[in-house]
Length: 231
Image (cartoon, rainbow, N blue to C red):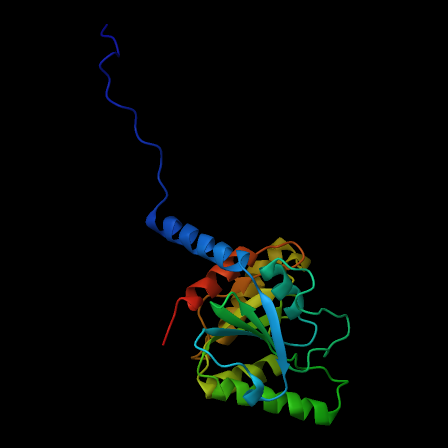
């Protein structure tokens, strides 16, 4: 019997494929971006009050109480950067945050709060419409949708407004931890089916839980990739 002294070298350990490597790099870029400073700048009630500059801009939109402020706090790792409230409709302005000069975050007014006055609703609608149509720096709107309820009629109104404004937007299902794992695929497929009819919708739907941190790294990565875009 021959010995194994001259056996060939062992097979190299499995290396991550190209897709895994790229995704790991995206996640790391997102981590680095949000590890830096993030400061509240101002609240604007008109488009002319927004800051100038060349930094790319991303915005967060969604129904009242969908969890926009909680998600922004989770992204930045700061508990009170964006104000959170159990009272729907609290955000009534465009709240502006500077992410280390690399990207500007905009927390848009929540919509769909039935108890708000008609005057307030008209004011919010006009502000959002002006913002979507008149902000050249805006790279993408992240449309937050409560995973427990899916896309509602007032979400569709905003979707159609973004279609008309030729604004790129991407759905983010929030509070994903509040539905059963067995229900997630149906919520994702239903959301994808509704968005497939809208040309400005990004094809990838993200999921998130601000409370548990799920999906935060992936959303940071998406924002980091947009921060690198310069027109």
